[in-house]
Image 1 (tube, rainbow, N blue to C red):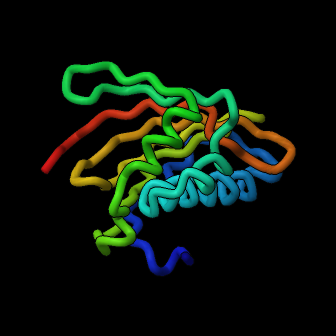
Image 2: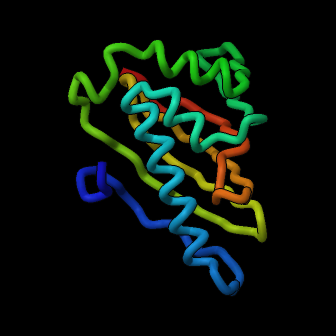
Length: 145
């Protein structure tokens, strides 16, 4: 899926200090965020595992219950979301509100809509040999159908 097929709102806020290669890092992180969203949209655990670090944690509240998952549990959850949003042709919604790179770490604040909910995700990234991976995901549900 190419970027032009997606509804993307907002532009990353540039809070970074001048750094050679920073724009390339931001592009790589942006691509990681898009694959992350597509993995949820398609209910694709294989794609999900490509953008998360193996030690990643996924944490947030579902109603009043604190949910804490490792990558394996989260990938299983993603696989169970059937039919997928892709299969039901749900509209895509993703908005990168903020993106900050600090050396070999980064974070992004991302709003996305999926499964009848609007999430506000705080994603932290770590640079690895193959690029940037999500190391931690904190999620907050802003709205629910």
